[in-house]
Image 1 (cartoon, helix red, strand yellow):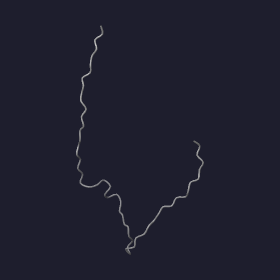
Image 2: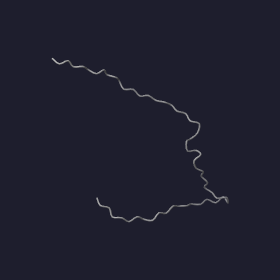
Image 3: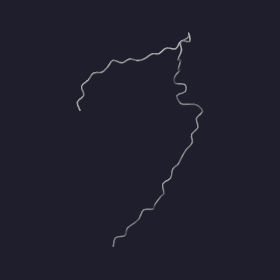
Image 4: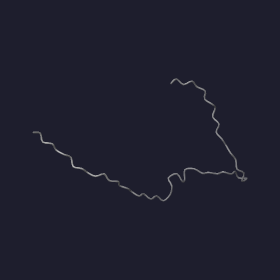
Length: 57
């Protein structure tokens, strides 16, 4: 008779680590200036040319 070895059951667990940072990672990576020096807001859009291609499926 063959002896069957059973594995030990280990119940699942959830671990959580709370990480606190002093500031945001991207806080200093960009400057947003919605108005010009005359305090006038402007909109600028990047317009890309349309792409017209035939795709084979």
